Length: 326
Image 1: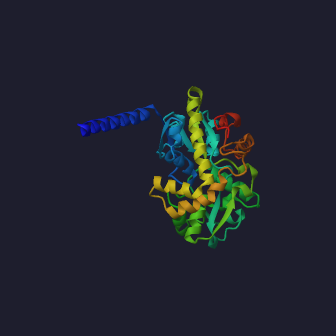
Image 2 (image 1 turned 120 degrees about the vertical axis):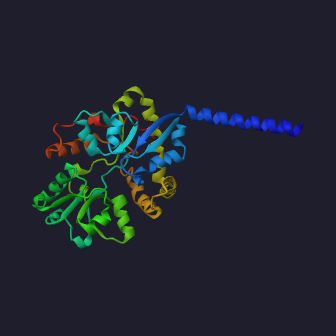
Image 3 (image 1 turned 180 degrees about the vertical axis):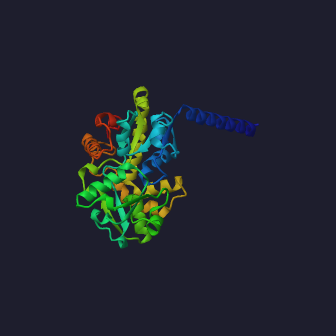
């Protein structure tokens, strides 16, 4: 009889526990985040927030999704996703076209991108782009940046052949049909180191202060900000905690990303994370904060280079309002 009563009591506890778990799950607010590209170390803080339960602590059930053909910005602006990953250059263009998307945090404080080429291409400065072939993705900003760098050295973009290399990876493309490409050093540059490929790099920040813009950034749409600011605040509280963890614990954070996305190369993830973790916050007072001068400088550069039809109202393009106090 005692055994029966014990089994009944145990079963009751299990049922109650399952019911409580189900109720807790139902009480979480479901939100969606769409990435800008395939998962990489730019996104580690997001996966840390998910794995360590930071989203759940804020009452959120966050689904991290990959971008479709329409891209993250369009999905977020159309309210088909609550949050997204983007970059200052695309948000700037979107805002001047009255697209209601807003940057709510800078993932990395300074632009870590630049033009890369294997050393045997003998491209040591922008003037050396003359007579070479650039492989890109077909955006007008690419030619504008190359042109602005070359003009500083009395060279002309007219002497550069520009082709669209699509989804071809950098290492295949430079062996096949291009000489240089625009990369993020924290991923492709670190991969080159692991492959034993020596690169020449021209970082954009070495040539113009105006090209030191935020890339990537975290976005949301104006409707969510207006109608449910508490969700934005809770989301960023968890994300900031995830990135701060990644800053302080790059090795553990890398392992979390590797576990979440098993298709990634573990060696590349760990090396990239070691390189990138100090750069998330860098010289900023805290992770995620954005400066209006950075937004105005880059928007001015885009307008001067005829990439914008109208000037940007920078204060509408971003906000620090939802970042945690500490």
